Amino acid sequence: MKPTSILTQTTTWLALLCFTCVSFFFADQSPQRTALSHPLLLGLAGAKFWGISYYFMELKEAHLFWKVLMALFLGFVVVGLYILR
Image (cartoon, rainbow, N blue to C red; front, side):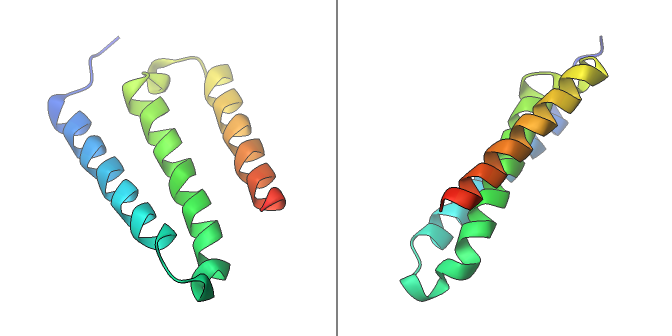
């Protein structure tokens, strides 16, 4: 198992930080933009979930079964939240 480089972890962390800032600004928008903001916020939350699990929980080193299981879980959560909105 090869450790993840500091540059990759830092880049991923900065991307997650940017996603969080973008999520904050879209969540703080006026109600007229809710048609666009809901799918965007769910997509950003899914990207953050995948980035954390793939890079910081070492999912990229895991067996294919766990990658598929996490992708299915993410899909069910995002689709379920989109339906319930």
